[in-house]
Image 1 (cartoon, rainbow, N blue to C red):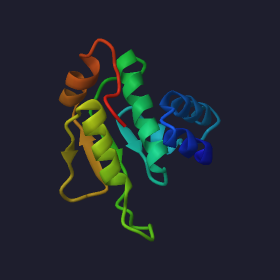
Image 2 (image 1 turned 180 degrees about the horizontal axis):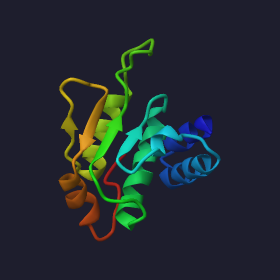
Image 3 (image 1 turned 30 degrees about the vertical axis):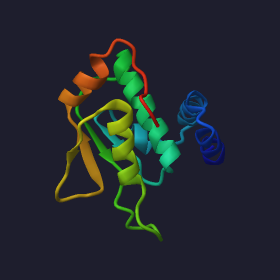
Amino acid sequence: YSAVVEALDSASRFDDVDALVMEARDYGFYRKAFISSSKVDLHYCSAAVARSIMRIILFELHAGARPACAILVITGRGKHSEVEAVLPEEIHRFLREAYDLELKEMPDNKGCFIIPFGSIRRSILSSGAMGVRGA
């Protein structure tokens, strides 16, 4: 799945990316990412997969298919990466630019952050038609 997701993401075919990630979820992939309504674990996900997972979760919140609450997002710190961690910065940027979400940093753990419920209510639940402002 990952190679196709990367190719579709590079071509800005985000609806196709999300459909593929949802299919992968149905087959048991990315279980940790969808483990609970209040926690998203993006460890070992590429940036393209992680963005898709976040789009899916935020869409499900908007559609009422997921309980509305604050969300702990775990990106990891890149401790096991050979290069500097990309995911934490990329997911922060994506959520702020695409959804105008406020994020609460965890000072004692740079590998995770919280999307406060108030930010979700303002940016996701209150909007009539949910659209991504940019990727």
